[in-house]
Length: 254
Image (cartoon, rainbow, N blue to C red; front, top):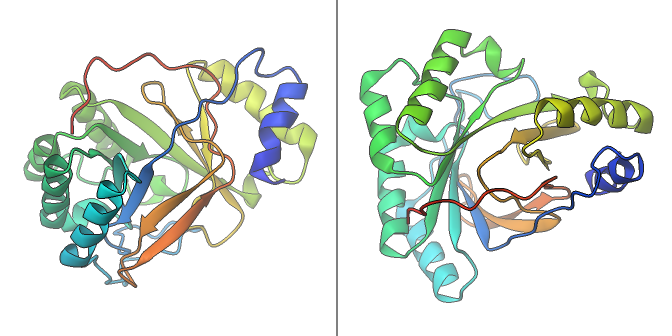
């Protein structure tokens, strides 16, 4: 089932009540590296991959996009971006200098590493998303994940959980099963729920992002700066959805 049909199916089934998608734009993704220290089944990023983004090329791209008014926020993605923490620090400073909001997506493997925890703290990110599902659980144990999650909450950075589902989870293709699944999700996570189609997936997959703090993007193509080519690509978000309005942030760190 195409993600851009999911919202209408859920809406028609009465799952969402009067809630509507919330739209924002001008986001971009930076693939800091396509190397990851995990080996999740549906993912194409492994420890053997070695591509790292060229900072000078990225800098020129970011400044050009910012001056054109095309980006206001940037997400540090991977692979696992914290494997290149020094590069993350340089990109974060670039965002500060250009008034760009900066977030990160991580698997949380650093949860009990005191040095990396402080590096993450000092990034002063707008938001951190920590991936947690049956795939990531094979590489990051529950105690380490919870330590990362608790630490992010402790330092006051808005946090969301992400988890990936694939064909194996039987939520694709069957409308009734999809509706049943999301009815349960909306009950468990009433604040908000966001869907995306991950660029890294090797198979039919959806990232389900539990995001109570931040607005989401719906039905857009998001520019992504790729580590392997050091050029702009497009991450097609056929269904980033937010099911309810989110509270306004008390502050925005650039």
